[in-house]
Length: 142
Image: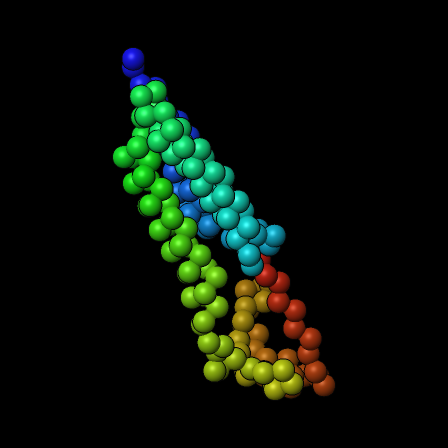
């Protein structure tokens, strides 16, 4: 009897790898930027497919292939998810706050930016002309 292709193993591994490399894509959107739930969803779907494929391969080895590749892919997938989780959930949270960043209530340091016409405007120039200035910074993704 010819053994059949065990597609859940291969598709599950591809979905786990896609979950790892899609972080840059999902980081562009505010809903997935601070907590990568979409990546973890892909990891979960890929892990479920890998588990189904492994049960098929080990449960009926004369019908389905994939005992060796499935085991190797499962170990690699677990290592990839562990690496991603460590980097995103632990390492990036350990970055200390900038020492040079102004604190709440502290006077902002003098800086120069270009206005909408391309002319340089400094904070000192704005403050010398009036009693105060309101600066609005838009977080742009264009």
